[in-house]
Image (cartoon, rainbow, N blue to C red; front, side, top):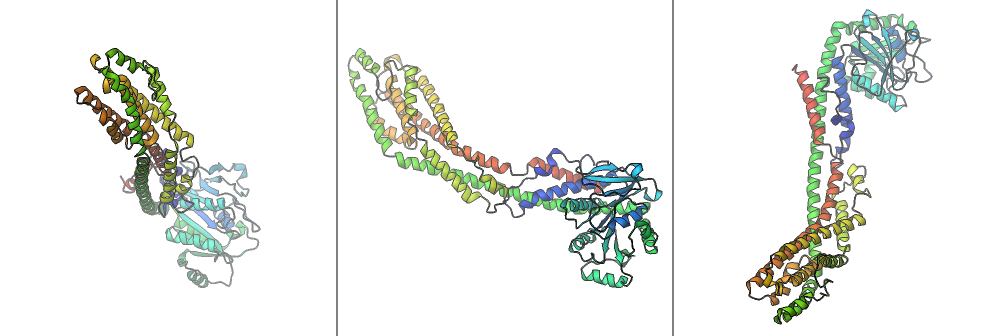
Length: 573
């Protein structure tokens, strides 16, 4: 199970990302970091047989002096003028493999050289100084002096908290001037709630204070300490460890301590602590999973709302273009097609005359007399130069405003609030123009290919009238011009009205008429889709934005698997 509980790439704290859409969502990264740390601690405790006992207390309570008295040597530096323990100092038997899967990668385990064993150590930040011992009484124990709980250095408080999580039992040191301290009070309340075995030592106790008075005073502060767990060590001057170690109250305390944590008791303490840690962790992980579920549901709802905004913006754009071009497009097509077919009326003359007319330049398209591919390219290019970018830009601007107005969290600390206001999120004017031109390029290529395929099927004797290649290309480029001008919404109806007066009852004419209408309809649809795809590109950016702030299914699955591995181990599987 140890391998299963290692932090995989999916279970790094930074992989637990949130949008801030839910009330408790912002707590998820911190909760996840704490969970993963506790998983690592649980794996470490199961892999190591020794019992960890941590000494906790405030500045000036004499915690380090008592630690030295338990160890029987001046291992940890002492003093009253300022906090002496800058980093944790441990006293451990050589049979206790401290380095094995140590759960705090930011703390290096540093053995104290034999020549420095009798020198006091203040410890260093980022290190756990370890003095090895071969004493039988410590064969299954690790005693740790931690930085002061009320240290002004937050990192010292964090180290003490981490080592508390790692502990199986606690020696909590207070003094008469410090026992009512709020920080110490709150931390010891946690010890009681976690049901860890503890020794509460009131150090520097006045000879006038009685056990009943102290218990009563602690009870008034909500600390329901069992009488057998309260130990009072009288004040001594100076407060050296060897002077304290020779006092009868301390000798009784030390004997009771080693009896409580003897080898047989230690194993039971570890089993009980492990079972409770697993139980509490499973509950907390379940709460974290519920929070992740609520975040996922909020993201799903947000994406649906985004889709609805995109749909409304698309519909509004199409409606705007319809209103803008409903009259002008129809009138324009009728005029220009009439010009085309004014040439068609002359086709009653001999065929040579017809050919000469059809080879004449078509003013509208700018085509050469041969209607070559190069001429058609020139005609398409001329139309594409007149494209209007402004309507799409305006629609996108309104769409972006609606997203901020309707989909942004109200709390400024929410990650999504900040991400939606990233200046790189909206499409730039350059990008919009590029996408519009790409849509036109694709449409022009499709139109040419469609024309070429249609022209190949024209019978030799039928290259006249509405089915003439020149007239056909002229009509198609007119539809293209109207479409890129914004009239794609009315193109089908406008073209139908413009062509109707010129369609005869001949089979070829009718077939050509329907082909042109079909092409025009698809052209309008393709161009509309091309423009609306720009809105969808912006929508995709918003989707990518929120997905980047969402815990991935892979991470969630890894968390579920990790929890299952803990449960199976706890059940003896």
